[in-house]
Length: 104
Image (tube, rainbow, N blue to C red; front, side):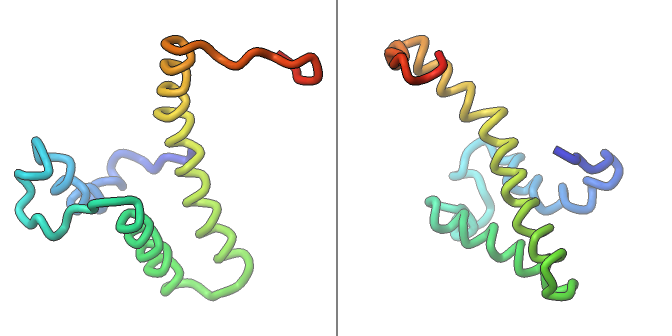
């Protein structure tokens, strides 16, 4: 994932630190700001995409870059978090038995 430099993150961290620094969602200064479910998270991601696109031409290159950035974040999240959870579940519960037609 093409992470941005530490010094460049500060512009955005001011916003996200409000969420990160809470010990729990109950400590957050405005409970109406908490994303309660997947739909609200999707709304926020879409809003960020629209903000990003508002400063760019609506051509294929810009649209693709916007979608690719979100997809890339999704892939990175899966790689760093979801895949680990999948491995834990396999260790706890066992994996699938392999069929001869699949590479195992």
